[in-house]
Amino acid sequence: MREDLEHNFDLAEFNNSCRVMKCARQLFPHSEKQAQLWAVYAYERWTRGEGGTPEMQRDRRNPNWKKSLEMFEKRRARTKLIYYK
Image (cartoon, rainbow, N blue to C red):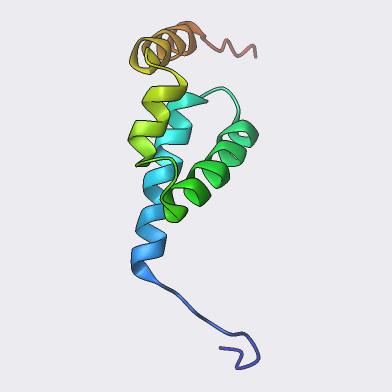
């Protein structure tokens, strides 16, 4: 392992970022870039105490997120790949 790299790994911070990314992927299943942008924004607001939990922010952003996610998954499941020889 390289000694010149500083490793400040905080498990609590990592778990919090995973929690925010889970909510971001539920809001934006179609775009990883949008999910990351929203996650950074939501994480900053959450750690400053301005926006509430990631789940609260997700629900405020899209109250019908479950229905939207279900529709996206259904549409995605219908896509079938056909391979020709």
